[in-house]
Length: 436
Image 1 (tube, one colour):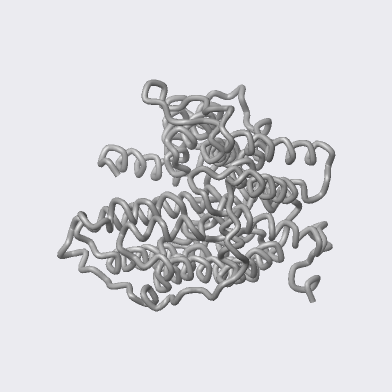
Image 2 (cartoon, rainbow, N blue to C red):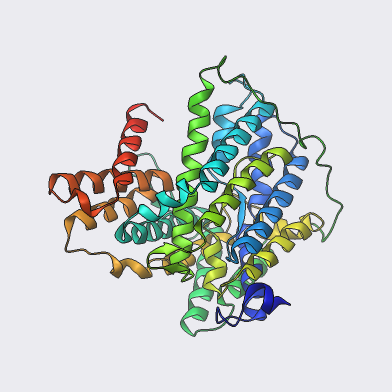
């Protein structure tokens, strides 16, 4: 049955490999189960209900991706947009109730769904030249490695230089280095399940040294009723200041999902002639998941770049996603156990090393960029550089698209790229001038 559903042999994978990849994905993204309630409670939402909404929306979205596309891609409430929702749009001083904030997310998701259905989002994705597609994948690798370095405590904030080396004698940092060393040693020796073994080793070490705490195994989940179908639709024509908010949710999710799917497509060898074969279905899943998440009571649900952790373990089909989705549902009943791995944000010596190692593995396509052609190499460079420095996948794509369009125009080579690139270059320029 599994072979018929997921074509495991055609993708040169096995049930065991997919199971390990799915579990690895779950352990890598499990932090969102605790981060999301923490963030959204700042907007006045019930933390327990948000936790349940996060698990259910992630599982349903991931199942949908598995059966519509057969891709090993995990979906969950997106980091960045959840902070924008909680701390800027719906914080107590903003005057916008979280119910109306969810309504705005629902409307944005509906727009995503329409554009995905008619193929506009797919056209945008396929219009990106190969050099920029590879740069996006590499930039996202640097981005998640940068997040991992922060979560590990290996780098820290500095008022003079913005970032600096963390305290290498700190217990969290030493545990993070231990986790990295285990993963790299196992990967170098080509051990199957190396990343998962590294996560388990770091978990055990964190428990031994008291960084993580054991608070039991299972308990009944809280009620979702406080957030379920509580969204309200604001009159955006009476409140014109909400139109830019809707636009921000729309633009960021669109370009983040395009960037993430492109990166995952290259990492999992899903690209065919530089295009993701089932891009339209994947983007429709992403959009529909945002709509469903708003109904359940959580912020924008989107494709997770952490899916690369499972792909690094050999996950190649939707079975990986199904396994992750099942664990997300089980997490509802095993919250104390999951909290050992996913708790401790923003410092987490279990998840941090995973993101660093996976980010490093995503740099493999750097030799696919034409470094001799400045009209290709500089946009690629800016894309890769700006993602971690701006802490935004969308801004990285924006700088890459603007510089690509500019250099092709000034060198008289405007026909080498799709016209849609010029439209989106203007779109990004307008966004930056307008302060969006």
